[in-house]
Image 1 (cartoon, helix red, strand yellow):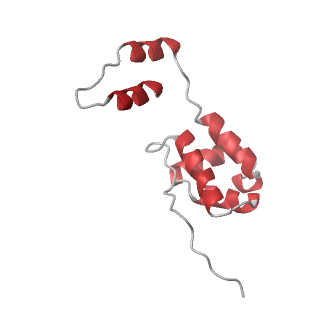
Image 2: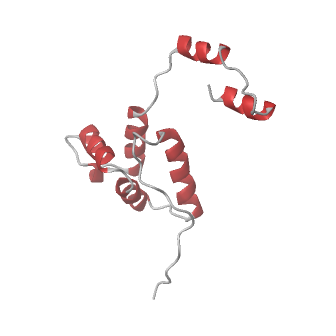
Image 3: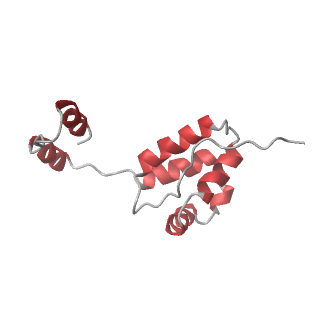
Length: 118
């Protein structure tokens, strides 16, 4: 008889309106690592299960004419990552960087960390 194991951590569903895909993807990979999930079919089932309804419909549309369940885990991750890959404007990035000011309640380390994310 197989022993039931409790999963380490908890992942919320991915909703593109509320979550950043690149951060969610890193959390997903850490979840798989922490729970020793290596089977690609299981990984695919988990990610498809963790998509909000709108996100699943989007992924379904991106996969057409195939079904998302027919894609490999790696292909799904690549497809989703390409879709949510942010377009970066060099001018907007420079503007944000040069206009970033340290907040009065912000330590120098916190400000430096915020600057690195601009």
